[in-house]
Image 1 (spheres, helix red, strand yellow):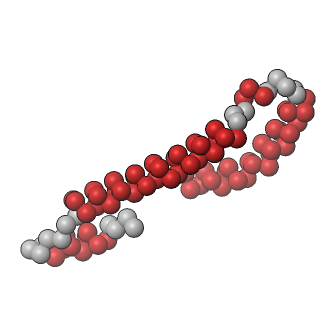
Image 2: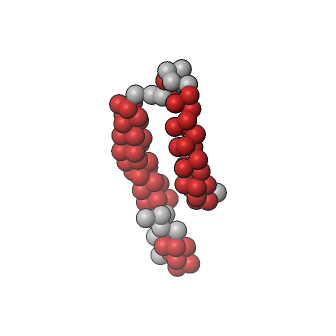
Image 3: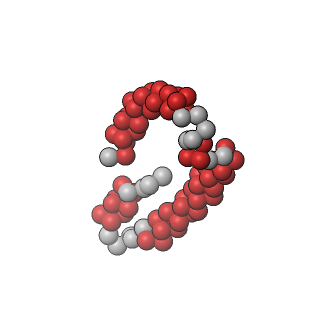
Length: 87
């Protein structure tokens, strides 16, 4: 669902860009409070993608290695464990 949503986002980007251009031109000054400072955007991007991304990767690796240990007594489980590898 998210994958197909990216196609709609890319396809609608030009329309929203043109709409934003005209709205800013017609309502100059009255729409400024809807936009946030560029530093806030930068801070949000750095926080989300670097800090939370590394934490979530560590959690996924911990869960994977904790609950998917090889079982020599059942070789079919070993095949299923290798098939699930998230990375």
